[in-house]
Length: 337
Image (cartoon, rainbow, N blue to C red; front, top):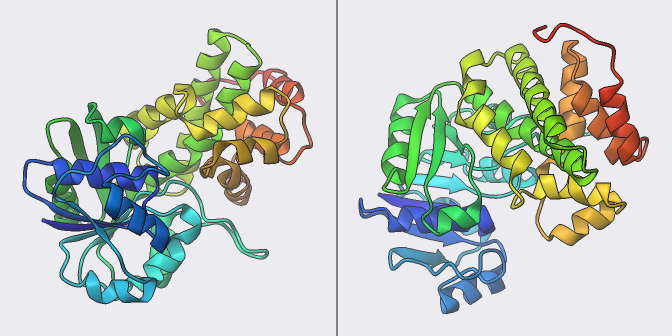
């Protein structure tokens, strides 16, 4: 299978390595927007900037090309994977809107809303700018470093197209990377987006040393918020008990490789939001998604108290201890509501 990954951050690079190492004989190309980075990866046979000490397999090649050259170069591919941050997804889908090859994206989150608009999930962006594409998302609990090292990982391939779901399984399913198909594109994307917000809250909780009981409560109530928003947007309830719901939430909220968790930990130490983000060197999607999650919940008339507390924390309206107090001091309600 001929696969091109567009975006040479840590996750795009890791997935390209995994696909090229798959025993099914994939031919994989990795494209970086920055020509200097592409040239360096081609020479070194690794991504020193974002994923050092992860050598490229022989079947992984670096694609050196300008952005406007991509549609023609990708026309004969079996699969195109967009591995950019969410902020770049609209432009990439617009560029590829006439692609004969199926297109999937890896980014998790909501698009940042324009002044008078509302932030969208990936499949909603695709419906606006590239409705004719055979499209989907690859999601689930996964740290790039572990995937590149061949450690066991399970992902979810979500699409309205049965053919594309099967193609994703064929492309990436292997000895260490297991891929499961799901037709609930809405649920998979909501789980992947909102868990980033919950990871900030859990990092804050752990940074303040509130204990494992508090962490468990926060993760559990966070899952309830994810499901509440997802169901309101048309998702299936069972999706949130799977890899892209509970699985991704647990990993991102508790694993120290999680950038969103690190934001919470750093805020608990007294760093400003800007200092926390600058120290990461990578995008933490939850910082941008939190406001859109809250905005969409309000528009749907549903209550997401953890999300609202995170938004107030990020906006500087609450200090870390105050954000936790706002959560723990809520009036009691029935657990299932």
